[in-house]
Image (cartoon, rainbow, N blue to C red):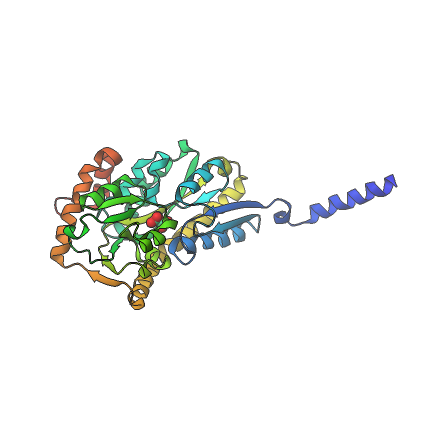
Length: 336
Ligand code: LMR
């Protein structure tokens, strides 16, 4: 009897040894985010999951939870720090509550004249230095992922600053965005992304700002009559991971995941422009939201009002940081 038990346990041990590594000790990464799957961030997260599985031979399983299904904006940051999820990609406008307010520099209106200027910052020393600032918070910044440039929307045409007067406009948690809306005479309201559709539908807020991809995939075109192609500000993400979790990974796995992330990042940046162009077309085709363009004079007027936010927010994000970005991109606020 005793001998049989010993033989059985020996067999079990041998069976366990012969199992693939993946089945023995699979590492699970919960990756939570707030947008739809068919968005730049949603697609890139899925691509990262595929690459992580392939590069680690199935040892790492990335479970992607889209659309605030697991956590809303504020909760997901807390969940990451507590280790309830391992990976997120919050918008750069959402790091203020964490105490890293310098990321709000990306929210300054018209600071990036397109993706190329933006990438000079995110792919260079400024971008790296900003990610480093997350470490004391128990977070490692792995990459920047693009979304796109934001447009304003409301149930009335928004073409001049006067059109914004008194409107309740939903914003992300950034103080720079608060200042942007105030510069236009609007009343900014911070709200989780998952609540925006309903807030627009019920009139809790009158309007908002988003790249076309977020606008369309959250069905905001059903509840906003006008969108103005202002492209006045950038929306992008930092992919972040719980530091304790990341540091605790076997070195070979970490290297494979870094490789997967580098590839997913190239993919994210490549799909972002297409997703936004397609979404804009879909909004137009829906016939529900009228898409407006600014005349050169209107654009100049809007820019003039919004550029004041750069000076105003120096104390929030750092005058030196703003100057360094101007230098990197060649932006001249006196001659924008
Ligand atoms: C928003 O809250 O408007 C965006 O940050 C959502 C997102 O993650 O793209």
